Length: 339
Image (cartoon, rainbow, N blue to C red; front, top):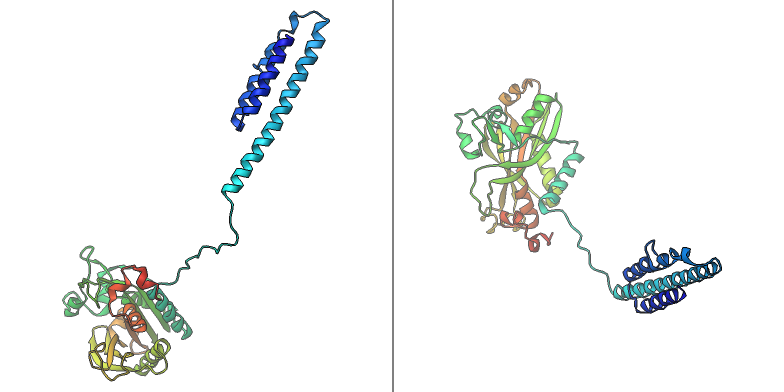
């Protein structure tokens, strides 16, 4: 039995020297010290020894067990240190190297200009109101004084879900909903996506963004409309910005006007951007039609108001000198990174 224990110690010592990973050490621990290990098997044979030999063999077995345990622990600590050193070497970082540049996002040109427009109107006491993009024919056309037979529908042809449900052509539908829900005085803008069945080109898209404004109160005049739009343009384009109003017709306003902005490229002298007219058409506006007020339960004998609608893409293109609307939708970072 003594020879067996000595052979176990010799074999274990030899294997420990060759071991190089924690998994191998665990196998050795189970092999020699486990419940079914070699030393345990030797101890089970102690019953066959004489009473004089039994204490000596037990002492020797325990001594060899402790020696193997000590050597296992020492070898385990050594392997852990070696593995940690290798890991540190492999993951070593040169702290003197420059860090990686972090790309910081920025607002899309449309969002940047929209945020600015909203801030301007909030400063003038307006509320910002949102509404559904999928609308009924009533809110999109009929409540705006455009019955089904009205020819103005042809210029605002849209996408129909069914006979009575459409994708809105303008955010004027939000104005109608607001007039139905609120009592005057009303002072709002309603920005959002709108849809028309236009062919895609440099100045048209079947999807674009519109900002509509509405003011309803006692004693509102056309002069209030002009002053509001003049303030907006000066805030957006500088104190030298000038607007021009031309008579026009919209079914939902009377009188109505097209509003032009002096060309920022040539200062009104005429160039290719303004088609040598000196002004660029920018938006439509006018005094809210009495029929529209009546349809929303507002007495046109007591209250008056003005409304306007401006394309977000158009003022963004003017603000940044962009000559093709499609650039705003293509998500080309070479283009967007300039703003």
